[in-house]
Image (cartoon, rainbow, N blue to C red; front, side, top):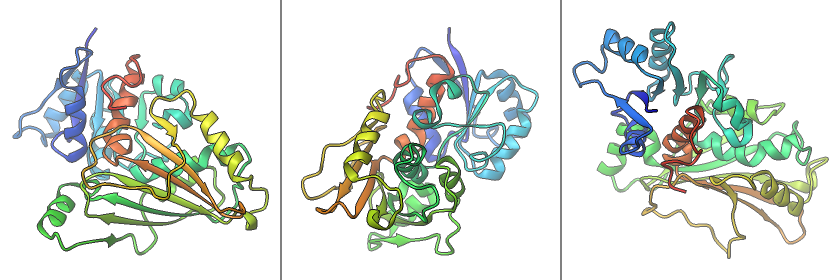
Length: 307
């Protein structure tokens, strides 16, 4: 049986990549609005009422409006915006961490943020297992390709090749922080320092750990072993091999829906670095949405993904 999917915001970066992953798949048929109707409320309402599933690839306010338009429809929704990531009544769409069954049975799923995906993948399993303290003031340093900023950011970087690094969220209020804190069960919000680099796609998220100063923290080998075991059943998230001196993020990175984790440590094991490497448009956005859609539709989790 073919399920109908309406992508509200299909002309944006995330929406276009979702369309690319779904095109040619017999399990889904896409509901597409013409350019002159895609912002029309009545046309969108009709699409929501006609669809089995909808994926919102919209700014936060527009995503909330879309949920209102779909309020009395039976459509099941995946929201790729920030609007509902800590909202009651929504399942957080990180199946490896929050449960595949929870996603599969949900009517409303919030897609994780790209940076949040790396941070939560590293920290949540370790805090929940008691291997890292929940009350530690964590920091998170991350760099992303410029495609994560949408069309305006893409245009800016491609028009100005002299930009080598762009630090932002300087007021320490990045929109991903609430979900990072909540889904890792942390007592305080992490100190998050994101930046954009002149690569189209790709992302590295790092959490430094001064283990010798952290009461109750486990040794690096125990952290590594737990992450390996925790994600053993996943074809998307995996613990990477120990790097030989460096971890590279290449400007020529090809689309990928994988998430690779590393636990690096000093020779005396007093310090560690948790590192996640992913495609910000893959497991960080479009790939995660398709993975959630697969689960909700009762299909193989990795169908149509690049893993």
